[in-house]
Length: 276
Image 1 (tube, rainbow, N blue to C red):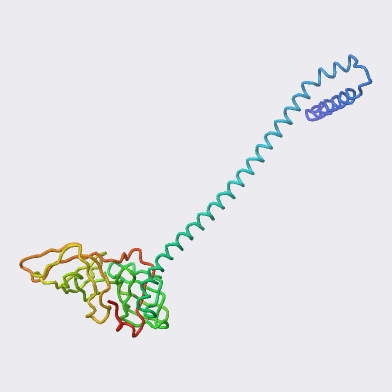
Image 2: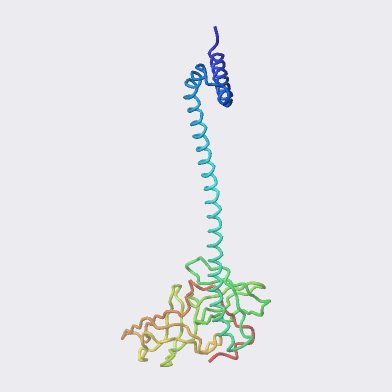
């Protein structure tokens, strides 16, 4: 008995041979079509049609798969290019913003040339108990402990510690900070004290003095740290209690410390010039 595999093999070989004979005979136009040829054609035509459809179907599947692979690859490349374009746009916008900030610095420092050292903020104290920042300038740049730190919008603080290449800045919002100040219009004097929050207090203003909300607070220059006339902030709220000698005054700082990135520091020996 023939095995099943052998039977299939013989059948397949016979099918191929018949197809070959039919194709060969049909290609010879000079030979007449005999009955046996018609029989062969009738028998093999359905098989040829099935084979042809199978070939076309396989080709279509392959083409579809190939196009899908190309589409996935192209999509990945386009996403990468889009990511790079977005990154370049973000860098451009960041440079534009930095350029605007630096222009403010240039306009401000042109009032007193060679007085300031520009520095970048490199770290912030994460503790809620202290309001300090670290800058990338230090003793090698001519900075000393106690030097005032500011931006074009107003006072930032003063140098608390100075190393060779870095310095720590005590912000005016820190509870250990104090700036001798006055109300710009009425010239009422007081001390701006930090409270470890986003705003400060204007203390020691007598209850009899007229102080209004919205008025500007500036440095008086009497503490020998900050030059006279530097902006500190605006009065948010004024509370007078008859049993107390001084008013309770809250001020909003002119500097947004959450958005601070660069600062200016007075050089050694330049403070006496002042700014008016």
